[in-house]
Length: 248
Length: 248
DNA sequence: CGTTATGTTGACATTAATCAAGCACGGTGG
DNA sequence: CCACCGTGCTTGATTAATGTCAACATAACG
Image (cartoon, rainbow over all chains, first blue to last red; front, side, top):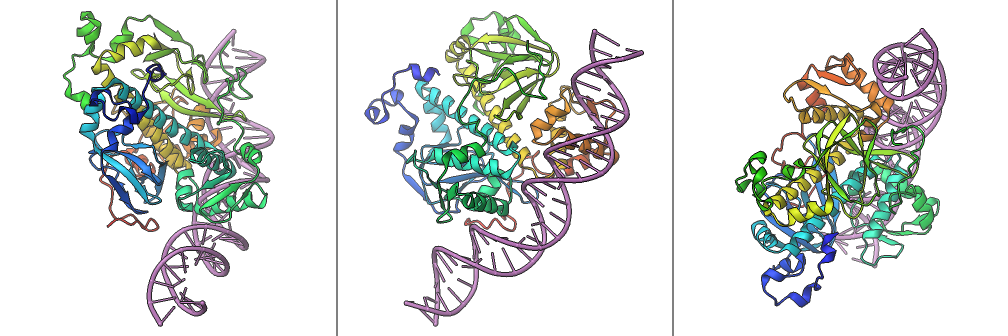
C-alpha cells in the first residue's frame, strides 16, 4: 500500500526532528508517562466518552461488549504494539480490561488527531491500523462462523501463536482465562476445556500449566483449523457444490 | 466526529468547483459511467489485486469469503450509498457479488487515493467510512456470538429493516436467498426456514412472498433480539454473576 | 407446461449447552 | 511448613438445540 512508497526513518532516529516530521505513531506516545493496570482493571468502558487513545507497551488486554442479559462477548485481545481507540467515534464501543499486568501510554484524543492531521505519514499509518482492525474484526466473524468447537479452538491457538513475540516457537502463552476464550469463540468454558483435553489426548498439544500449551503436531493442528484461512490462496474459480454462481 | 465540524456543501453544488474542494466522496464517482451487474455476477474476487474502488448506487450485493472445505461465509451485505474497497490492502480480502440487479460506479484505486490525499475533507470521510465498516464487522461478530437461532434471526431482520430506504415501515425486503442469510448468520438454510416459519406462526411476522416479510409485532421481535444491542445504554457498573471484575 | 432452483417440512443423528460434582492450583493464615 | 479456602478448571450425565439427510412443495424460467 502507499505507505510503503514513502521511505520512512525508523522511529528513534526522528526523535529530535520537529514534530511535523515524526516518522511513526509510537513516537507520539513515547513521551507520555507509563500507566500500569493490574489484571482485571478496566482501562475504559463501553459507552464512555472517547477522550483518549492508548498504546499498549506490555501485557495483554481484552476488549469486550456486554449484552442485555448479562452475556459477555470478547471482540478481541490486545498486545504490545497495538493502539487502542483509533476506530472510535464519540464513545468507546467496547470496554477494555487488563488480562495480565499491563503497561500503556495514554494520549488525549484531540492531540492525537491534531498531530495526525498535520502529518501525512502518520495518516497513512492510522489508515493502516484501521485496516488491520477491520481485518481482525472480520477474521473473528469467520472464526465464529465455524461449525465445530475443534475448528474454533484450533484456529484460536494458531492465532495466538502467530501473535506471540517469540514467534516460531510451538509454545503458546494463554494469559486469558477459559472464560475469556469461551466468550471470544462463542462457546462455553466446559466445551473449551473438553476440547483442549481432547487435543491433548490425541497428542496434538501438551498442556502442562493452564496458562500455556505446547503444540506438538503443528500439521495436525493446522488441518483441524481447516487448512485454509491462514495463507492467501488465489480463489478457486470453480466454487464447489451448492454455490452455483453466474460467472462465466 | 470531526468531519461534522466542517461545513459541507452537499454534493451537486460543488460539481463545477476545482477538484481540490469537492465536498464529498460520492462526487468522485459521479462522473464515472454506471456499470450494471445481473444477480449472481461477481464484481471482484477475494485475492484479486485491488485495483478499483466502487460506489453502489442501486441494488444489493453480498461480500463473502470461501473456506477451504467449500463453506461460504458472508461477511456483509451492501446497499446504495456504500463504498466498496476502502478497507482494502494489496488484494481484496473478500469476493463481492450482486444479489439483486446492481448499478455502481468504478474508480481506479490510484486515482481515488490521489484525490483523497489532497483533500482533507475527503480524508475525514474515508476515516468515517472505515469506522463504519469496523462497526459493521464487529456487529456481525456480536451477532454470530448469539446462542440461539431466534436471536440471530430477529437481530438480522431488525438490521435489514434499519437499512431500508423507506425506513419506519414494517415491511422488510430480503433480496438475498435463504442460503445467503444462513451463511451470514452461521447457520443452515433449514434452521433459517424453520425459524421464519416459527416467527410467522407466533404472529410476530407475516411472510407473504419469500423475498419480503412484514413485522407485525415489533416489540416482540425486539425482545427476541435480546433487548440490548440497538440503543447505546450506559454500561452497568455491576456486571452480573460470573464476571467478577477488579474495578471499584 | 415441464424443468430447475429455491424453500419448506419431517425424522433422525450429533453436537454443544446445561446442571452438577469434584479436582488442583494459589494464596492465606495458623 | 502445612491445613484450609476460593477460584478457576476439569469431568460426567443429561437435555435441548441445531445440523443432516431426505422428501416434498412452490415459485421461477424457458
